Image (cartoon, rainbow, N blue to C red; front, side, top):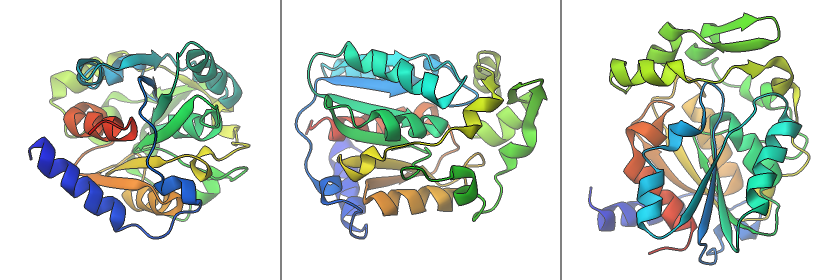
Length: 255
């Protein structure tokens, strides 16, 4: 699909969504020159390595946050430090768990739009685990291996359930750099829902085995997000970097 056809499909997908939770969700965002990227569980900042050059080629200033994966509060603080360094309008992007970060930190006045990539998107104070329990348990959950209060995904689950559409040698390299997360991270709840205030965009992965695709669709509909759906594993930012970069460019107000 060429860029023109992609943008036409993107517009059609957004128009098909029901009314947003807040009218701002459908507002055209102002042009932004900065992008801050946040990674989720089982990953580090390098997971954006194929998206970043595409954004930089469009003239954007890009920062990938190294999420500490300790507590939600400390993870949000890391994103806020990155936002504080930005000069002017900024789009905040989160993959997977870091949708929690986008939802909380996205109220920053510098943030003009939000992008969720197969990401959690809770409401303020919502128990995400209770929300997720309304949907089938994703297979990756069975592959989490604990060592005291720290956990990561087993290699088998990583290759099969997290990065299932990547070549095995590439998936193994990503497995090697995954950051362990602390048990306390999962206990955090957002206190704000930036998607009720800012234009929002969502990329659903329809072959996701880490977050149920129907849960992703529900969260995207609820926020009234401009939504695309990719034939992808949870790692669409690596298997479909062009589409993810184009979605971010749309959020930045680029044609």
